[in-house]
Length: 458
Ligand SMILES: C[S@@+](CC[C@H](N)C(=O)[O-])C[C@H]1O[C@@H](n2cnc3c(N)ncnc32)[C@H](O)[C@@H]1O
Image (cartoon, rainbow, N blue to C red; front, side, top):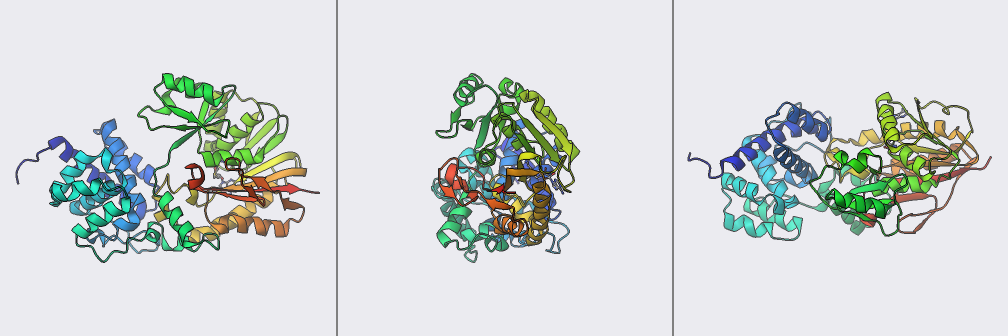
């Protein structure tokens, strides 16, 4: 074998293949989140610089994003894991270098060819795909067209490559009925798009003021035309977390759909709110901010480490009206019926964030849904004890599945007649909802989220 024509790129591609083999195995077989598997792998391989790391990360996530099609390619047909995580009977996943090369070439070609043409060129050489064949594919506008051209070249006529394959089979059966096929296809295609970064301006600064300050840090952030505190960040190599405005608590990174949950709560200055499943406090901070620092937000979670993160974030933002407590999901935290509002942002499949975490669609099992919906109902019932008469109870998930969303709310309302749904308008589109609102990615280029707003009458 002769010397490679591009030694640096060849080495980068080989390294990427090794990283993929490890992360794919850890994630698809051991159900470890891909970001953690990748971080662990890179921690043990300190020789890679930041450019390599960024490239590996984009490439590996592209493989998960398009896994539903990639696993139908001839070289990967032995890798039919993913539809039934934990139940495929596989205890390891061995990738031959050629399989890794095919997966990576195909994933990058379909996902973001313009950013990695030189790497694609080196992989094409390895796979003996002539330049005259693949270059024109990379110019095709539609990802499907790019993928099908490659599949034909690999003599893979047998694959379906249907948009339904981009999610596990069971997921389609868990969506709200009746959903016309055009809506399902739209959902599948939106989950393939890489999501933007959204910010929430925090404290005294306006979105416009923040945009101006960020421009000095070479970050372009565009204020949302309707939502006063929301900004969309244009792609940039600058790490937002290391900027001075971030360290001074002027903004938080928070997806627009997640911000809609806080807005649906509409907390008033001077009220008492309880964020029952606060985690690291994305929404607790938003509530405190909407209350302009007046009143109280009690943030609870079962995980003390998350609350520790929340306290750091609250200090950075300068909020003194936010306190944290451990809560194990049994009864009200503190005095029952004492809060003007309670938010239950319940643990869920996080299927609404599958754009951001494409690996999770292949590691979530249908059985998880039953367990989660029981936990969600239990947490909602317990947290409801904290709502005072005339107060609000807000239930939210970042899920697209009925069993975690409307069905949990319906079961809760059957058992708690003192609560009833309170109509609400979609804060961004203005569309009126009966009390249950599903936010979809195409509405505002965001994650999917569900929120239900209920009031306690007695
Ligand atoms: C969707 S996350 C919350 C995200 C958070 N509200 C935010 O905006 O960043 C759900 C949270 O519920 C918590 N949780 C899970 N099981 C719980 C339980 N049995 N009791 C109380 N909290 C629980 C998790 O620790 C997790 O932080």
